Length: 348
Image (cartoon, rainbow, N blue to C red; front, side):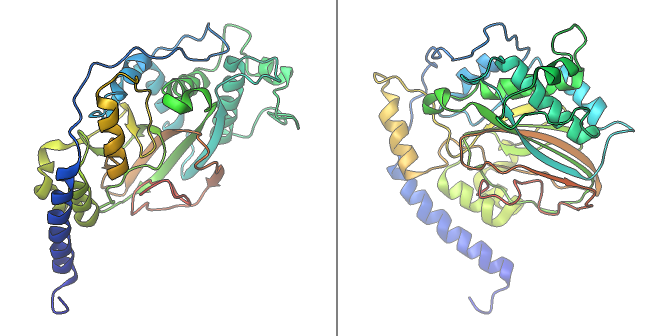
């Protein structure tokens, strides 16, 4: 192999792994597709929260072990609003922000989840668009001051539409938490990247080491993803060879690209839905998970770019896997390997 070129060696190694993984995959048990069970009641401290997106339908669909990604409908108005604010003439460029948004009320707070999430989304909005208009969005006890809520107009009929759109996405993604996370995850992490030049060549395929990730491209090419779950040898081919591996896994027909302003939710490695004890597929699902941690995860990648503008927004369930927050402004980057989770182990 020492006389082979690097590309030839990579192809040979992939073919060997292809055969080994294909043989090992024969030991995994095929999961019988079942109709999704009725969702468990969610703990929301404010029953008056009204969401526009098809979040309940998405939660049901994600419980299917053969479903790795869903598209959320009913968000057109909110996503167009975000595009007009974050991608317009006066919008900032070369910004990378990740902040926590609290989506459930705190037992020690008199504020509802609606008020808390609205003010946190207002914090995100003002950090992106301008300096905060109030001093201290949260006091030293991590509680929200009443004057902050009043300032952000949550008590009258004229709320900021951009903040409302962020709040819809935050609470919507949070509502998708399922299984053991349903009663423990209270927050999400919201990330917004406004890149003036995006020139990724062949970004790597990967899965996310988190339960779920919501994602929308406000301007530019959308995320590329495999339509359906991938077997181990298929992931090896895509991860090691990129687009050259698509031919080995019949990927030309399975590779999809999200449209601009299409909000998708992708399963990560740690997705865990509620499975009834009398469901015959539960044991099969657990066996597949033990053999292959990415059994239900969405294999995807950032799209290739042509040095044009790209603006994305992503939301992760705050399950404790990565609690980093950051703000990077004014640094011009080319994003040659795509807009993956930087400074993190959440991409594999």
